[in-house]
Length: 335
Length: 258
Image (cartoon, each protein chain N blue to C red):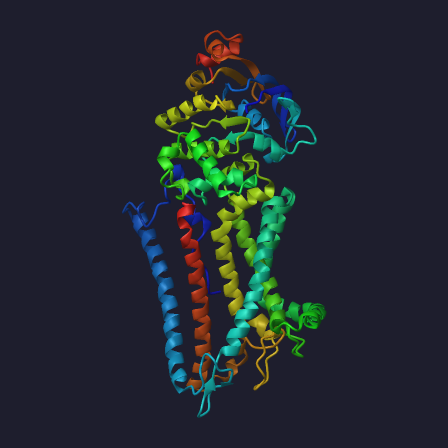
């Protein structure tokens, strides 16, 4: 789990009398307790930055020599033949599979997760709210191997006719073109990932929606808002930064999910033709690395996989930065 | 556009708890009626029944009748959403929508009513902010967040937001209790102007305020601890404060309890 935006609704809730929340250590008094906790918090904060930097440095240092020896274009090649005298490897296919599968996962899980969270906080009868919220939290904690097993044994047979149906009816569209692969297609992986991250999106969104101040909700209702209009005027804008954070956390998990995906993917044979189809097979970064961990026989070969890992690292970093910018842009309106 | 409120034998319940019992009163159009009484006597609860905001609290329900001119607010065909568009409300703590600009806060109710025309919106927003005595202070920063204003300005923004939808009645639930004396004075002046156009009902803990702003005053009290709140009497403000009919009112306003 590599991503959080670091923003939460609580950051933006004003203090008493509309004052801004205390920032930095304005409240520190210089007494032992303050210095102790202030110091501990600072060390922890610095530690995170140092750790992330060290991981980045490790990835870069290990990847660069392999990349220097690479005879293929790292970003646009689909060949994966690291090691040997003439190593050639490119990540295009993994990038495509990873990004499309995660996009499908997000497109399905975010709207549904937000809807479930709204149901649990705004519509559900009160006897149901707590138990249901507990269940969602529990689901969020289910290990991914369970989702992998379930996907393979229970869900794949159910999803197969759906896939064939879409390929039959919409096959003329390049994204839905038939490929002959029936098991772990990108689309199938995306759907399993969506189900896997849905509880994360739901649990965190529920948490922020639940904190919407009654005053804002009543303000909207007193203007003659219907319940849905109240949700749109008061609950959703208040929960927005939280939903974005939740989505980023979920996306981080989807992008990097290894075991469930490794379990389910249909790896493509070398030299297969390129297809835009979501019903093609393909490896994600994580599954490719996991599937080949036993082959890390020489530094150059290992370096190729680490370079792939580096791309994944940068990808999550970029996505998080974008989310951060989106949240910051509207910050004046949340204080 | 102001209407008369006629309440007959109203009981308010939260679940099985009876909060207010047997209230009957008439609120005249284009006047200010103040509700006073000790904490927990049900005056805010009763106020909320006048635009059905008590229904927002789980288990909230009423028995009895509330008429707005000839409309029965609790008729089965009456939608609470319609009631709240006719009877506006201002709350104890200023509650502008934090994610919206000053302009959008005032326009929020209009947008809910489906007004989209930019010119119409501009016009009503300006008129409402002027009506709330806030226009000159904010006209140059309409696109700035509403939550960036001072407490008193925020409350006037909330009043502008409430009057923008042109309600018949404006309910104010202790609108000054979170404000300093200067801002309070500004709101009281505003109430005086607003009563030319609206029927105003104001709950207040401040008896001087009731004496300053209202034409009629209603005194609420509990029969005893644990009993529901009830209306002790309602009369012209001068009479309530100088020569009330009930001994309980006399005791309360002279500071003998509460």
